[in-house]
Length: 161
Image (cartoon, rainbow, N blue to C red; front, side, top):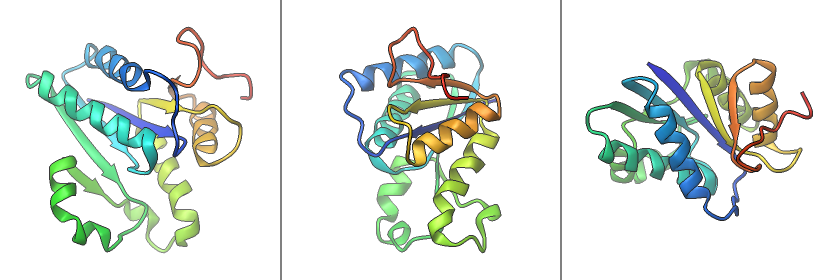
């Protein structure tokens, strides 16, 4: 099984970003028969990625694809919008490792938790600050395979390791 995590800025404005996410997922699906996609569910990039995974699931019923929402902590929204989450994600994970972590630190810790479990990270990082950038830097330090869709197709963002 291959695990893929997503990380990106809340706002993602790149033209054709949806198509680029879909293309990366399609390439990845050629490599195995079982996949777990970890999504933080925050911002437009995560929304684009979740939508692309759901589309891939419908195009490839022969492949076992699981889309997991990884929450940094429990929120009442999970109960209030239960039907949305049931339809949108195959499972919801709230990592036990985040118990007793202050909520202001929980998102960064959740992001590192996802990177630690991922074989590959698909990111949208176009600036050198913020949570997505910190997650991306952490993935590079952990020597994770990383594809940055904010850059030209032929390049990877590796100038600040």
